[in-house]
Structures are given as structure tokens and as C-alpha cells.
Image (tube, rainbow, N blue to C red; front, top):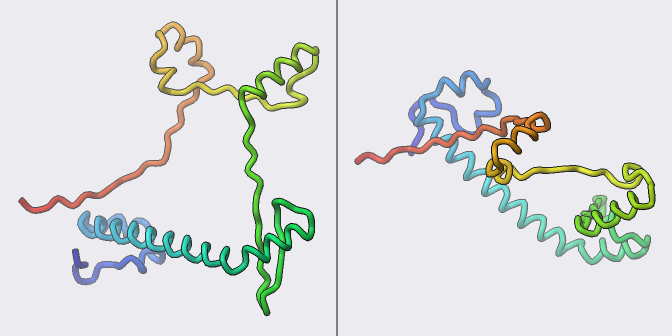
Length: 161
């Protein structure tokens, strides 16, 4: 759908106040939304391709630099002419919940304070909560806080029939 005359284009949006954008007709907003989603998708695809190329170009040198300093994660730096390549490989730690639970029980059984060793977090799946009998839900109500998530609005252009 082409823009009507004198309507802002996607590249104009960062410079416009939200009130001015909100005043645009719905069909123009729908086009801008579709174009922004397409541009974001294209930018993500371009970034993924570029990131892959950087791994191809520098990956072996980064791995060697990491081995040279005895690191399996973290940040290493190397030079490529006038460019400093900074490669960060963060740690992604995952704990086996069942085994942690067993350790917590051992700590408690030994008479130690579990909070000195682990952070304990309790969670209730909302689907489970909704399925509980009312009496049980009421007991949990004081511990439950409901906050709204992020509002999303999708504009659908109706095709002429």
C-alpha cells in the first residue's frame, strides 16, 4: 500500500513526537507497522549473517587466544590491522533443580542455614493456580501479585470484498 501524499515514512518516525504519529490515519499506521516489522526482520537477518561471517573470520584466532590465556569463557582481545577485535563468550550456567533440592535437604538436615548457600525461589505456574480449588487459591492470594505485561497492538488491513 503506497503512502498518501505528505505522510511520514518509516525513516521519519524517530524524529517525530509520538502524538504526531498517533494522529495519523489507521491505514497509514498499518503500513508503517508492516514496513517497520519487515525492516526489523531484514536487519536481524543481516546481523545474523554478519555475525556468522565474523565467526568465520575470527573464530579460530579467538579460540587460540582464549586457549593461550587458559580461559574457556570471558573476554579476549586481538588485533586485525587498526581494528581491535573484542570477543566475549559469556557463561550460561544451568542448575539441575532436582539435585539442588537434594543438596538443600542435606544442608537443612545438617542444621545449617540454607540461605548461606543458595537462593531459594518459589514459583507457581499460572495454569496450575487457575486449576486449584478456590479454597487453596485463596490461601495463596496474599503471596500473588499480578502485573500487566507489554501491550501489543497489531493493525490488520481488511481487504475489500
